Image (cartoon, rainbow, N blue to C red; front, side, top):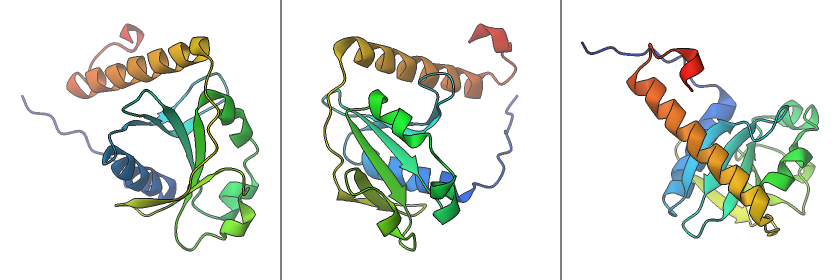
Length: 153
């Protein structure tokens, strides 16, 4: 039996996530959206690069989305590089100059400014990669088996 899962329309931040993920995938990164690295944190896009680098991208769809969010600094300790992703109409002067910047839309993106590299400690890298892999595998399994019991992963 072939079941189709209805998906609601994507929100503005999710459209940015899609454009960012497409761009990073074109550079050999595997991306996962809405990853929870630790309780109280939810990363918009986490990307695992071809050399094992870990990037976090925080997507901001409007001025109020940025000004109302104070959690983004907590994401810095979970990545080798951190970026903000915004659309072409976002007032980028609001964003910190010392972080990466990506301009995106729902189909593509461009890295305008690289975030500074701060290598994760080996123990933290292991935790992040395991969380990345486990979350990706569980999501794939749920797509293949939507009736899967929630306690099974």
